[in-house]
Image 1 (cartoon, rainbow, N blue to C red):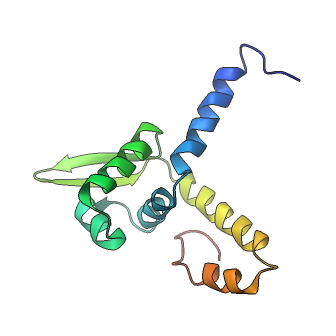
Image 2 (cartoon, rainbow, N blue to C red; image 1 turned 180 degrees about the vertical axis):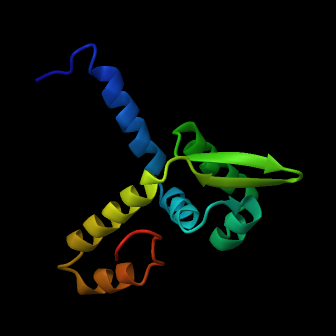
Image 3 (tube, rainbow, N blue to C red; image 1 turned 30 degrees about the horizontal axis):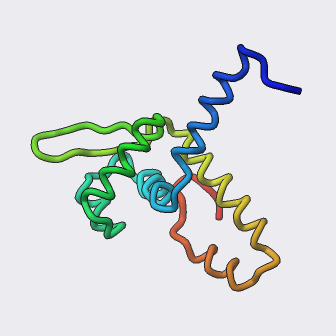
Length: 122
């Protein structure tokens, strides 16, 4: 069944949400933001060890896809999740990951050692 003219834009918005999530560092940045009310760019850079330019590009993608919002205060920029339900999305994604890897003990052990996501179960 093809998409109708009215459905296509809705599926494009949904696809863009997943495009925003489609990189390991962007997912990690969202996990870091899920653990706090807000996080400074400096703290995100220290945690991820990304070059400033790469971090900026990833944060830009997350902003463009409405996953994070930023606020400048003096010479510092702070980020937070745009919607608290993103924490739930990350927790569901983690649960799906653990289910997919349950047959592969080595990968499962590595996945279970990932940092916890606030508000989610392991």
